[in-house]
Amino acid sequence: MLKKSIFVVLYVLLFLNCKQEKSDIRVVCEATPPGYYRIKWETFPPMEGTVKFYESSVPDSFNLYSPIAEAKISRGFMDIFYVRSTKRSYFKLVFNKNHSVITAERIIPMDGLSNFRDLGGYYNTSGKQTRWGKFYRSSSLSKATFYDIKVLNNLGLRTVIDFRTDKERYDAPPKYIAPIRMNLPLRGNPYRVFFDRILSKKWKAGDAKIYVQDMFSFLLENNSDYFIKMFDILLDEKNYPVLINCTSGHDRSAVASALILAALGVEMDQIVNDYLLTNEQNNFNSFFSDDNILLEDPEVQETFTALFKVHKSTITYSFERIIKEYETIDNFLNTKLNLTDKKREKLKELLLY
Image 1: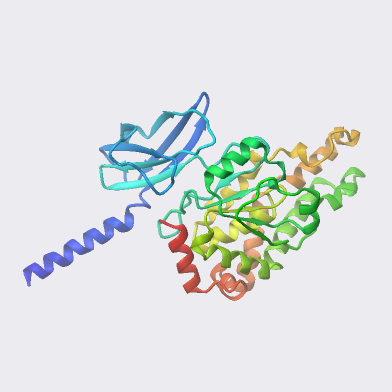
Image 2: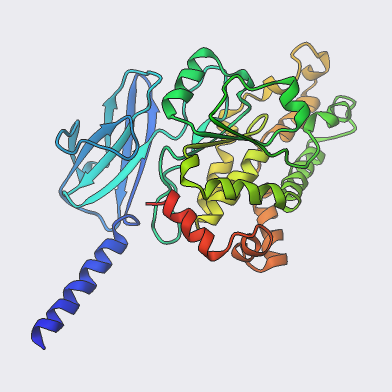
């Protein structure tokens, strides 16, 4: 009886420790000039001891016999020198030999492509982390340079999902061709149809902001058939790594990214933060002609900026609409997108650790 009681106590302690392992440590990796990765971490509660760093160009394979650096956990950060190349670096941090977290630079620098980033490293409500190097979001691949194509090849992309219309793809064909290509032309008016209203000052910044908000909701609520196909692709392990893209990467790709992260149970504040990262990545001046003299008008500039920036209220408003109609995001995913509990569990097995 005593042995049985001891076994139960040990089992509970081990279970609690494993359950807390990933949610107790948060890590971010950022490129900082001149030529360093700054890796920062926090532990909850504060942890003493040593953290070792391991590097790999493959997100799921690390040589744990050769750490590249070591630091006291209490330090909270480490700068690691790098030489920028077309190959990507992933880092595994091992805390006191038994707690580990994988991290990488979220924003992947490109020459011609904008808004290219990895959706790995986000935590869900159960403390699990989205896998690095599995799914990416980007602007159109029509502007990919030779350097960009080498980066994409080194990422080992298997599938590209293009949310642009047939006309958009015809006018600006992709310069990178993945083994698997899926065209899912999401329904929604392109922003350029409203340029005349902005240039003639019939639209103000407030009008543009409301339009962006309404368009996000429209995309979310009126493309269930395409999103069902998207999730079918994501549920097949042979299709990874996957890249989703549209023209600028800030509307259609944003809606799809938010849905994927929501399906994985990622915390809403992190979904919003990923959405807002677009404002740091997009070159707003590239969306319209530089030779238009009206763009020198501050009022016109303000309206264009409101149109092409993303706003926190846009995504929160759209998800609030979903919750109001379906009570929960889970119900929306299940009833509208046919993403059953069984399918979600499979998706989590593929995209979480």
